[in-house]
Amino acid sequence: MNRKWTEGTDRVLDFIGSLTWDELPAAVRHQSKRCLLDLMGALIAGRRTPVGDIMAGVACDQFPGNQATIVVSGERVSAIGAALANGFAQNALDIDDGYRRVKGHPGAAFLPVLLAALEVRGSCTGSEFLTAVVLGYEIGIRAGLIRHAVYPTYHSSGSWGAVGAAACTGRLLGLDRSRLREALGTAEYHAPIAPMMKGIDVPCMGKDSLGWGNMTGLASVFMARRGFTGVEPLFSEAPEKEWVTGLGRQYEILNLYFKPYAACRWAQPAVAGCLQLVRENRLKLADLASVKVRTFAAAAALTREPPSNTEEAQYNLAFPVAAALIDGAVGPAQVLPPRIFDRDILDLAMRLEVEVAQEFEDRFPGKAIAAVEITTHDGKHYESGAVEARWEPPDTLPSDSELKDKFIWLVAPVLGRQRAAELLQLIREFEKAADARQLIERSVVE
Image 1 (cartoon, helix red, strand yellow):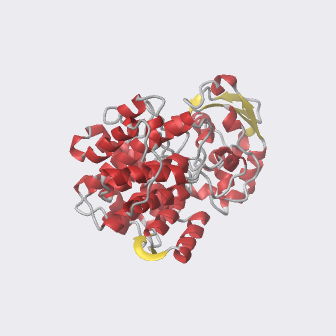
Image 2 (cartoon, rainbow, N blue to C red):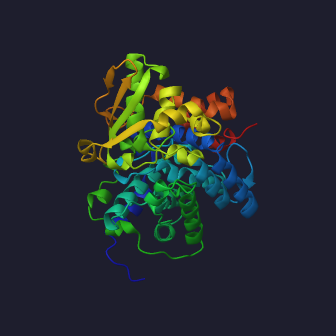
Image 3 (cartoon, rainbow, N blue to C red):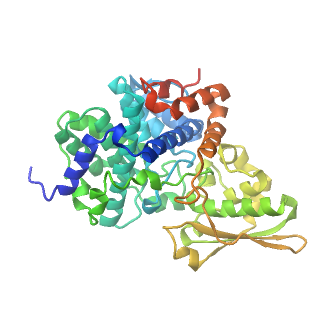
């Protein structure tokens, strides 16, 4: 095979093949467990959404087998079927982690693949699994940076996340160096190059193409294992060599943001600003005469129409703001029926004013910022000032306690409080687990 410059891919393959749990910095090891906890919470809660049910049914019908598990409900299907169904559930609530510079969701792009591969493999230790988690983030994020730089349009997470999924799964399943290279190239070539903004302008269940990206990542590993050849992976095209040579020195897993609300990240600064004003001034729904949001253009472009489904409630600016003002939260309860049809929320949402603020537009996508202004019926005026989305690096990341509370908030209604607590404890000490499959076993309703 006539390959061009390959130094970038060679460096990536070196990193995938040599990384060990013990050599990871303590902060990275700890962050890997925080990320796993957060992703499992989003996945389990996402399984109870309409798209979660639809794709579980598709997997059972079209990908029968006994290789892997669909979480919560426990159906057994093929490994690719499980990666597909769990991949759609993983991002169904849009409450999983993200990375600002690729405007996407690196964790959701590979965890369902790792879970399926774990069952195919048979078992591995918790520390081996967590090492694969770190690889998924480090390789996937860099693939996203390169994809956006070389092909400058807004790419969906599945388009680059499939490469990270193939990397960490190939490691978990023991692919040799040459086959792993083919798996990376195959995942890149077959990944869903989805028109991201089209899915935001008209929200649908396709969302960030994460379900298809997960399936592609795992299929690429299986194909390479049988001898399938792929293109030269995109790491050899990296316009900034530091993106690749920094592997092992700069851990991007430490630069993730987390999400406290089940809504598009672009809407979350406005949600945070509203909740701040209500809390500080003890405002009530009956007090509110008008609400105005000043924000960056992408957030302002989110629909403000009444939602007819969960996806339209999430890719919306007015609905999550109104839900936050009335309920004090934006979670599964708010973005699922019947709450998406609540008259009070919809009436308030229709009164929201939105304006693009150039000072916030100039700082996006590095920062996602909004300012909220509330006027009450008695003529008082309240302003939040510039507010960033909560749980951003490096200064406002959630504490371990806050991530624990979020996990219980998401998982207890699905699995019950006792099982949620048991899963929480397992993940907190996951590096000590002798068999990582406990993660799956404890994510199924008894």
